[in-house]
Length: 268
Length: 306
Image (cartoon, rainbow over all chains, first blue to last red):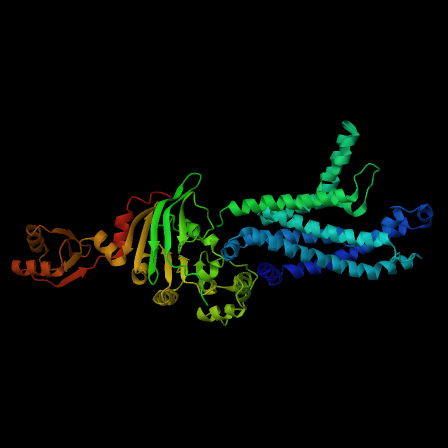
């Protein structure tokens, strides 16, 4: 508990957190506008007529509005989580930290706890904003708010899970790749373009070799996260919880391997 | 409040092998409480690596380092037992000194006000809220000391703490470390500045190329190593005095300013020889053995190119 308080104080006493907080505002605005536009198209009369329940396009659009800011919000969380770790090496504070707490695995656990706090904070802020804006956006399209419906709350809940799991993955990556630039660059690329590039590769493999390869594309973290949040896109996709499990596995493996390395490695 | 009393630092056959170099090689020594122990060696001798192994930051290839019989990493409350000053630049540039100390307080379960107390001890209380990047090297060293004192430890380990300090700062550090040792604490301080150690240390541990050269009280190490004292004389009749001295089987050399330097004799002997030879003396100075010369003699040829 002392260590978590120390890590929270570390976070609060530099300029980093409010730079990220300020970034979140325009990012949320853009995301909301994008989802608004998407919803406008999806919920136009043509589509609305064919909305037949399950996870239809309309539900997706409504869920999207209620989880606005997810894409870049998670990017901020994952980067900030990685920096929690890489900062220690970038600013040479690892010596001081590990002198105070020679059991290094406890330091990493505390950082994970803080990354969960960050993830849930960003999720809470974006969700509260969305609960305000989404019904308004829907009303401009003459749509009901859908706020009483379970699929909306499921999307909001899974959104929280995505934030938390990506935060943990960020800490794990920071532990594994100690270089500040290395870790943030790897995560940004993996998160932003990784999904497109890697699903392209899987599609290519699927057409060239065997269709069933496509099922395994969920091992890519971004796609696993997609599966968890948005559900199956093809009939033979694994269920949502597989996506969550894969994300959790990544976070766990990165953290455990990184922690073992950190325990062994000489500091300074 | 009772707490375990870790005082004696014991290094036993400590070795650190890196890919190409054996930074510390079968090093053993002990450091006692109530004294300032100087840890001396040329640059690259392995001092920092040895200190980092004592503090559990670097894993030894072989051997052990304990404080009061316990490894640093096994102490439940290490910073209440051992305070360490390693590199001066180890704080986040954008964080204030006070917050840097508070982070350590939180992690160690110490009250926040300890941060202000130690800032006052090192004379940084008026600049505690300034960001670390605005600190001079001397201020960073003082902040390092402040962090080491947070847990009011019985043992202090300092790596080159006088680097970057001005003469006034060096004197401040010397007085502080002596006062801490006088309170019964164990103080181990590394340096390559020998003149500084001569004024500060009670004991010395001298290493070169990762190996122990000598350990003991400063006076003993000086006596054994520097051995013979030297005498410098100035005279208008240098040839006559040199002949008389050589007849007495003393080694005579010429100083750069025309003076004579005699080893293996004290001022009384040289004065007596000059008197019996009827040589007029203008100056007769005994040069006491100094740590620097002893150190250079001891480590000569052992440092190598490392």
